[in-house]
Every structure is written in C-alpha cells, then in structure tokens.
Length: 523
Image (cartoon, rainbow, N blue to C red):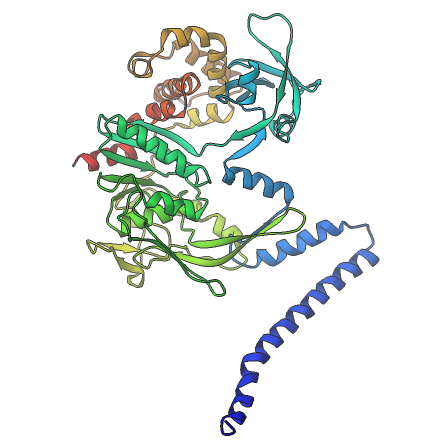
C-alpha cells in the first residue's frame, strides 16, 4: 500500500482541482453579475427595472449560443406550454373578426359555450359589460378577455340573426382542447391522409384515433403530411413512429456533453406495420417532424416527398425558473438511425443569418431546382435495410423532390388575400347563408362534387379590391386568379360547414406534392 500512496496523492488533484477551479470561476462570475446589477441600479442616471435588467442579461447570455437556446418570460411560457399540453382555459369557440366584430365560426363540441346555447354565426359584442365590437380592439386583447381560469364565469353579450337586441349568456370557463391534427380523410378509396401541425401531448391520441377511423373506411396506404410542421415533443414523435416501425428498430438517439445519451427504439405499436407509407415535408418541417421523417427514411419504411426540411437537430431541455419563466437550453444533438445529424450549420450568436436560411434557399434556387443543392461526401450515409444513399448536415432530403410552385397564386390573388378580402367574403357568405347551405348540402362528398361558388361573391371580392386600388395588371392575370378564388372560397365554405379535413380535401385536390405521393403509393 505504501508503494501506491505517493502515486494516489499525486493523482487526486488532477481530478479534484479542475472541478474546484470551475466552481470558483462560476462563483466569481455570479458575484460580478450581481455587482453590475447593484451598481447600475444605484448610480445610473435614470431609473431602471431590475426585472428587465435580469431578463436582458439572460437573453444576452443565450443569444451568444446556438439559435434555439432561448428565454421566455412567465406569460410567454404559459402560452407555449398551452400549445404543447393540448389545452387552455376559456369559453371554447372558434371565431374570426368581421369588420371589428367577433363572429363565432363554431363552438367547441361539448365545450362551455355550446353548453349554454351559443351558436355558429353569433356575434359576441361585449364581455363582462365591456364592449368589444366596433371599437378596434386587438384580437389578442379580445382573447385575453375571453380566456381565464377554469370555473370562473364570464358574461357575454351576443347578437343573433332573427333575434332582436342583445342576448346575454353566462359561460363558465373550462379546459379547452387544442387539437394538433389538421386533417384526416380518404384521398382515394384506399389511400388515407393525416396532417398534423405539431407534436403536443395530445398528438399521439389524435393520430391513433384518425388512423383507426381511416382504416375502418378501407385505408390500405397512408400519406403522413408534415409540411410546415414545426415539431414539438421528441417523446411523442417516437410514440407515433413506433406505429410504423417493427419492434426494436432505432427511431432516434441523442448525444450531449453533460447529459446521458438516449436511444429511442420502436415498441412495435399497434398501428401501421405493413401498409405503404409516404411522408410529405417542406422547408418548414422541423425538429420532431424531422425525427419521424428521418426514421421512416433510414429504416426504408416509406418514401419521402417534397423539399429539404428545416434542419433542426438540437435538443432543448426546459429549465423552469421560480417566477414562472423558463430557459430552453440546448443540451444535446439528435441523430437518425443511420447516424445523420440533420442540424444545419450555424454561427454562434448569429441568429439573424440563421433565420434567413429559407430565404437564402429560395434565392439560390434550391426550392425550385433539385440539382441546385450539393452535399459533400463526408455527409453521405446509408439506409439500414436497402443501403440507399442519404445525406446529413442540413435537414432531411426527400426521396422525390417537388419544386415550390411560384406560379399558382398570382400577385393579384396574393394582394386580395393580404387585405383579408377573401376571408371576409367567406365569413359574410356563411353569415348570410349558413342555414340554407347546411340544408342544401348535408353530405360533403356531394358538396365537393357539385357545389359552385356563386359569381356574385367573386365579383364582390374584385370590386372590394378595386376600392383598395388592388387591380390585375391585365385580363390574363384576372382570368388566372378567378379559379383560385373559387377554389379557396369553396374550401373555406367547407371548413365552416364541416371542419379542416374537408378544407384540405378541396385544397389538396390538385396539389403536386400530394398527387406525387398518390402516384408513388399506387406504383
């Protein structure tokens, strides 16, 4: 033992001193930050907010790191958690603003507003005796008045067609579900489509319910539409992925400096192990959407159609602070089964350039031409079963590239849309004709096949545009715009009479990405 004692005495400081030194550095930095805060508050020429100073300091620290580490105050954190948790507390209505007046599109089924008798088409003109109609109140302020803690009561003043004066309803606020599933419908007799916009706590249940319903309608092949899906909870993505991959298949794994590595493996699920699968992505598909896409591509489980995804391969851990605020700190990178890290390059502290990546892709021609993007051989990987070549280092590259269609919507159409003339025309039409339309078109498939948007509605949109000096450059632009106006008006009418599935069923009727997926699944 005596022989080894000097060696141990020599060795121990090599392990202990670095830890002590690091702790001392941290304590010294904290004292320095505290002193700067105290001195600023004591001697600065104007009064300052300590809370604001601290938040600015945190933002300054995180701003020098990667583009996804961020701070959110208590209000922002609550709003962010609501979208992931799948619920918020309020009165339960879908609404839109028509000429400074809140019009109920649909009450949430079995929600607090429906329970007291509020109907689609009702106008909410006051909240707790405060007038909200015709006073140019912002949408955010109106929402803040309608929302509130569960079981609190709110008095709503409602104007209804056919009823004189203002009717008053006392609504007891409740938990209102926030659905992430946008659409689930049959594209062809044997091909189903599901579209979801994020990965929240309710997404798995929503997806499974949709799959069950589509299978009951004869679905044999599936399109998973994750275009513009910004991601969400990694665990939820793994749960959904398990429905498509055999038990034991790797879905994704993570590696970080000071956090344990994690490997997510398919549990075999109960859903869709055999049928053909196509995944739709675009330049806004990110994070959890890329995990699901990458796993299906790497395991050769399905085909990917669209354009290169966003390229977010960084894992954030939420760190709650005492006042309800939160830091989302990047702690690891995630990797697809073949070993790809799909995080696109970034410069620490340069969030502006990072945020312009999609614009740069458009300007470089990548969104329009497949051959404009080139990956180095160092980023080449092989899929697990068929050994196909795939690339890492900047998003998921689809198996079949579909260019961005820049010609579908004319400048004239985009300006009419930007001024809300299209959505307002749809709201007026439904407001005026809801009962007649529901009676005339009880079946959606019949509506989709035979309904034609009246010409007078289209002419009204064009005339409103003229009043705001929005005109086509020539007759050709006008004639090209009208069919798209009719399509979107028909889709908006279907949305308000039924739901979003019917809306996408019409919008996607000639969509090149969906059509390519259908072609490949039928091949």
